[in-house]
Amino acid sequence: MGPSKTIALYAEPRKQSQLGFGAMNTRQLARYSGADAMEASIELHKRFALPLACIALAMVGIPLGVATRKGGRSAGYVNAIFLAFFGYYLSYVSLVGVAKHRTLPVPLAIWLPDAVFGVAGIVFLSRMESPGDRDLLAPIRGMFDAFPIVLCTGL
Image (spheres, one colour):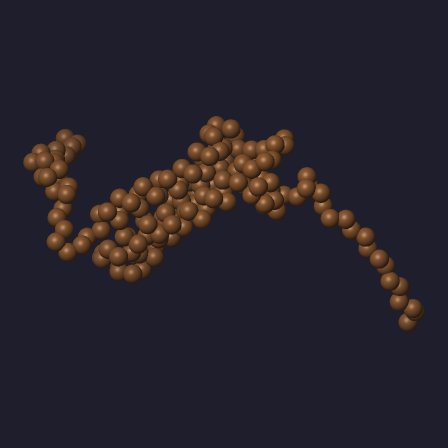
């Protein structure tokens, strides 16, 4: 074997313009005004919206998980995965795509799924059954029960 040869590698750190938006800190993203400022805005809003999504999904999931239903626990898991993936994540990804096409403003596109799930969570939490509760929608359902449902039989 021959003598070992040492090669020194000189690498320079990447410049700020070469870093991806995920590597930038929040202050840099807020002040960014380059050609792709929309991508920076999307990343900035993601950093705040995704942590709040956990709270919004929990506000929806807890009342659904506590409610007893016919399917048992496995139905609760299926509902949770359905809501989290199909309900939240697909709407989030599709709205980000709409924002990239400049059809919808970035803040609205990023925060809309959080807002929808937050409102739904507040409604579900307020509707959770507690001892001595009364059904607030019973009078409205009673009005619809008074009208007979006419089915088309295809005669």
